[in-house]
Length: 278
Image (cartoon, rainbow, N blue to C red; front, side, top):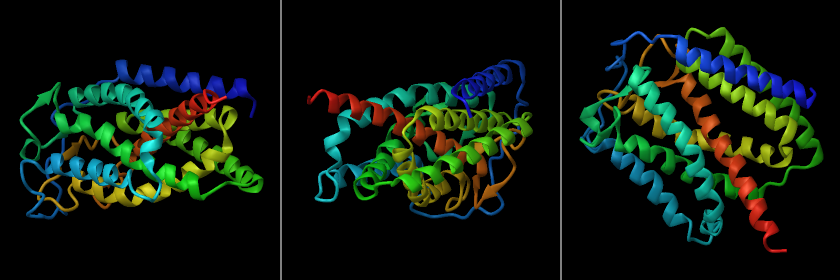
């Protein structure tokens, strides 16, 4: 695929998303506040549940950052700006969808501090989770080095995934969460196949597969896997309709988009810092 074709697809996806956001109304009062298959965990079913989860996610990795395995703190100067840059549009997106009730939050498990329909813990999410996952990405880059054959295979794999995401985004056009998340993810991945570095994209896929393990448990808590009721609730008319456990399928793509965006900017920042040494 030629580069101008990738840009055309990306621009069309962005235009489609803007049309979707501003000309499609979301039906209100449709949030699912309780799941039939949720279960109560006494230590988490408390007012501070979301805060506890975010603190554990951040500080467990923060402590490991100074250990002998990786010394993650050495690249914080590249990781932190990338996390902040990505957090800003994601928080704005989150605010908009919270206002439209595409998703919402159980006040039983969050602090009283809310800003624009979102608890403070939700803002922290966009810093704590990428910070933890970039530690995994950093370790993967230390231990794995993609060869030419692996990079070639990865290219076709990424093209296939990007096309699948774009097709689903168009197919589920009437579902706000699905259409925006899948179209953005598919178009960004396709652009990166054309312009990005396949070697570190190969390592990102390994990182993402590893990250799915803690993601399943963290997002599982948020969506009700071990709670009496979910912390994060969804409008059933606006997501794909399939859950893995209690986690909507869309959340896995959302996670990909968040982490892939941070990894791209982290790599760019690392290259700038490397040039500064010469």
